[in-house]
Amino acid sequence: MITARVSITLLALLAAAAPPDLRPQAQEGEVTTLAVEGRSNQTAWVAAHHSFVAIAWGASSDAKSDVFLAISRDGGATFNTPVQVNRTAGEARLGGELPPRVALVPMPGRDPEIVVLWTARTDATEIKIARSRDGGQTFAQPRTLQRAEAPGDRGWPALAVDGQGSAHAVWLDHRGMATTKSEAAAHDHKSGTGYDGVAMAQRSGLYYARAGSSSAGERELTAGVCYCCKTAIAVDADGAVYAAWRHVYPNNIRDIAMAVSRDGGSTFTTPVRVSADQWQLNGCPDDGPALAIDASGTVHIVWPTVIDGATPEGALFYSTTRDGRRFTPRVRVPTLGSPKPAHPHVVVDERGGVLVAWDEVINGTRVAAALPVSRNDAQDVTFGRPIILAGEQSAMYPTLAVTADGWLAVWTAGKPGASRIAVRRLNARARR
Image 1 (cartoon, rainbow, N blue to C red):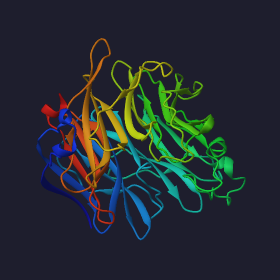
Image 2: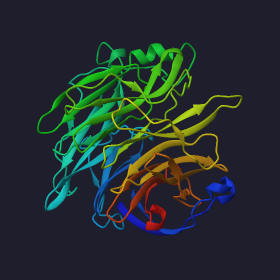
Image 3: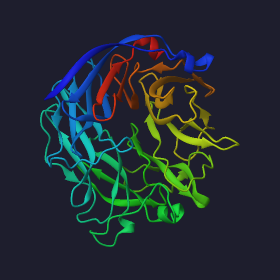
């Protein structure tokens, strides 16, 4: 059975686990849960336009996964019955760093068009995209973005749409490691004996494709990518396309890079390093960047890295850019106090207000939190008080959207095997 269930949750403060100046806001709120009953529900992504909200996620059982989508027309207060997006049952390949992605194309006088992107694995691994033009009731036949019979493994895609309704996608691709369709990338890309991260990265590529009224064939933007960290892509009001990913530099330095297209995806700039974090790791951290663009064209980027020292410490950092080549000095995001905050997401509202979300383990429980960010005319960055998104149950992989009423937070709640998608609208006081 497919359900959309609502429950009332008292949000735990967890103040004892946070530094004194980061005491989370004390708030009650409604948490709406979405689920396909009898399955594990996880890996959510959300998009919103005014009061129209679309959430895509994966529902799994018996080692098979499908992509589902639920729609709200009241800013996330209630949702319709979820519908399945993929047509080949059980094909979806999903995970915390490779969720299905959803984006909206505003349409005058009617519901937005809905675009959903996901990774599928059957005989081959494919990046698929499908559209709904009837408010999420049905989806057109999915199309694949990589060329037919492209060999090797691929995934970790990201999605954005431009003002003309074209969909822009990037993903990580291992076809450079396979000369035929049957040669899958059967290696441990995290770490292991004999693993050479730099050499492996040179055979891994960042690929791009555009799908719309005028389509750009898929192509490699760069080699040398860290293979299992999520990618990010965003399009500004003028149609400039910004892509970000974790790059592998000499000596196994794994820092964030960005490339920009100002001709609708036809060409991209040479990749530029966002910040010289110097995180040296012979393996993949499974943790990538997040992007958002405000009305002025400023690009906001948040990413995880490790601060070196006697006891290396994980951290999240925030920066901005106006051109994708010059970046403001990184600013550390104050998190809840664990040594490894992870899985960041970022959104910006129509007034330029920024919200960052992430998760981390506090007292043995994975906690999802969100933090308001503001900048003055001098570009000085200040942070508000963190908002704990859930109570005692586990909360991970938060994703955010902006609605007509405020911010919307979505995350995976509960234990593996019985998890659900949780949705919470954040009130005006939390938004300031």
